[in-house]
Length: 291
Length: 276
Image: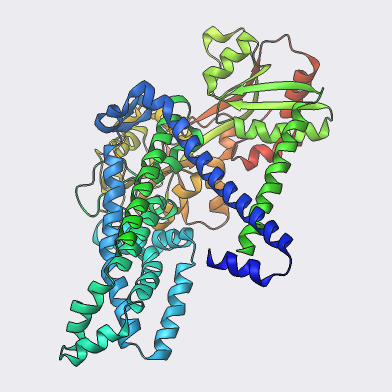
């Protein structure tokens, strides 16, 4: 709003303003159209399978064996949730500690270097993380437990993928806490760590939570990394070294040659991912408006 | 912001181009040839069709996948002039005329440091059913075997299961992969792994320095040459079939698909050209 009023005042020509209004309006409409088209495509693709098999069979069929007409997606949903939870568990402490380090412990030069390193890491494409996971992390884990690829490998590489962006967002959230809060708690005699733990972090809570949920959404939708390091077996994992298949990997693996109901069942996979991500976005909005 | 507007207008131009190209192709009076069937052959047929359209102006070739059985039934009902059938014709399909355009072979592979270089058919079945779990039972080191399987729907999986007489559910794998390249990368990164891939891909990767070896099954060493001579058993035919009473366009296309003009396309899809 602000920018629009200032723009129309500062430009002498009203025509330019109107042109920009139309242009931005059209681009916004196009974006909304594309999003609706994507959702419509996924829903209409999933519809035949949902109609013919019913949602129950996707949850209760004994395993995922499309060739035998079994479409039990429960192990795949559990696999997805497990690998993402693992990644979040690993990434959260790292992200929060690095935000505190940046704002309260690091010398300015080190802090600036570290910030640019985080930004650089955040820009690395996920396929590179996947390749690195496949050629470095999996062989390392294989020394502990063969074959190395599985839930733990997936969580580790996923967490490395989301830590940089999460740390940057957490850094911003912690920086947004008024410095007077920290200063007054020190003045009241709190030790530095105590002040950070009881005053600064709780004040940054909603920003941190929003950052976390955003990164969870990114991890849920990630495909290449999990496809390359998780083993992709559609069975319930019983341990950290067990292979898992995620919903996204399910689509990527089978879509190229899937036909008929099998193809439609893969759209159901995509629909579940979409619903998870939409749910997380709603959560972010909730957390933000709470503030 | 300006950047985003630029991107959107770029997208709009792209969409407009797409739409215009669609309308152009539908509103023409060219001769059209329809090919349907096996999703294994479809990518190859599509490449051949593209080149055919360029070298034969005024023709249009439509390729639709949908499985071998769709190819057979579409040709019988006259819905398609050519069907793609990724197997030899059955005894009750003598009404159809096959043209063999390629063969598709599958090789068992392992890491080059693995001392095992030959397995029997029963040993492979036992490994893939999870009954043999360590390499020492097959003449290798006392290490656990990592079984690499293909994702459902892949043609290499179908050939593999068919030859070894297994159902998809029987396989107890530790890793499932999609593309041949992914299977090879998994084996490169894991000296205890066993996998199967298209022979063409395996030979190509090995020649370019990948540390893998092709494993002989029941004494037959896998090679594209053996597939071409139909001496290698874990393989199948890729046929284009017609009802016989074909028009000129169909005949021209079949001859083209069988000619040296498309030899590179067959190889780029990791299939093997049959020896004639």
